[in-house]
Amino acid sequence: MKILLKLLAAGISVFMLTVTVRTSMEASLWSAWPAYAASPWAMATFWDAYSGFTLFWVWIAFRERSWGVRILWLVLVYALGNIATAAYLFVALHQLRPEQPASDVLVRRPL
Image 1: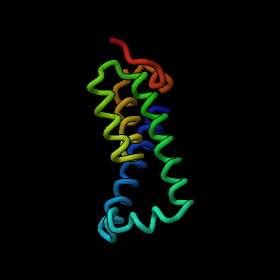
Image 2: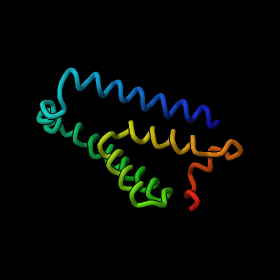
Image 3: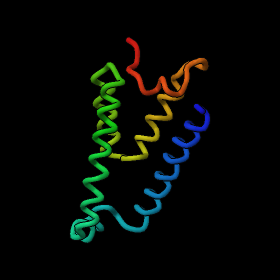
């Protein structure tokens, strides 16, 4: 199960990074923003995504013990979105010992 979850997390991170780079090469975020912001559905999707990022970060903040790490991941999640969320899950799964089940990624990290 851990291997499947790692592959999924890595795949999503790489896929989203590829989509983001390709899109950025076609049109910059800043030039596309006015048309994007004019669409009510685009803005609803934007706020939906950032609400999800905030909830994901709350789990990170619960799980991590260091405020430095918490703040670093807050910046990464808000700046990179699901690229960062998938990377965090990959790293968290990778830090588990071989005998630990994948479900241990959900609990608070020990001191």
